[in-house]
Length: 180
Image (cartoon, rainbow, N blue to C red; front, side, top):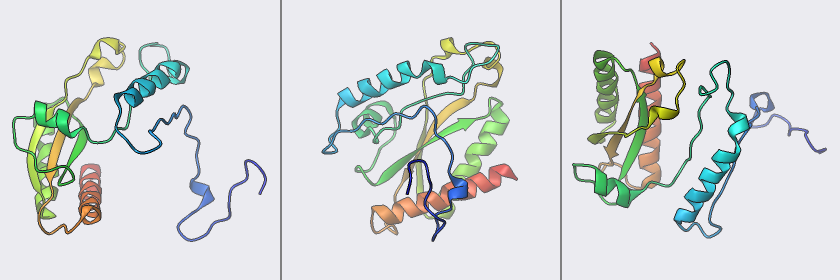
């Protein structure tokens, strides 16, 4: 296979679904250890990808960027006002919700409906603090409300993989309902 060529279609893989992921960086500890230094290095990567901002006429309106981290259990225990089960027995969903209070309440109700329908528990919600001072004039009117939903793993999930499957089904059902 030459450099740049794609493998042939087989099984679930289809080269037609390949696409660029411009501006991606990856930092990890070789032994899987959690270290704050990894976060600092990830932030440095983001700072150096400023050219990747997909900016237009408003130079402070880009297409966004962020870090994907392991679940910060100790942090969540310190900032939420509800109980959390042991690590691995809960998940956190990050939601970008409408600014309109009525539409936001409706979206949250959809989330809770599917969590409960799949036999899991909504442990609580958290408003994510934001600093929007870096947003441009063209995007401020459409800035979403960012909330986290905490989902508890119930006894029907015998292991982490079963819980992950439940979460996947919940997310797909929410996606489908919201698109209706």
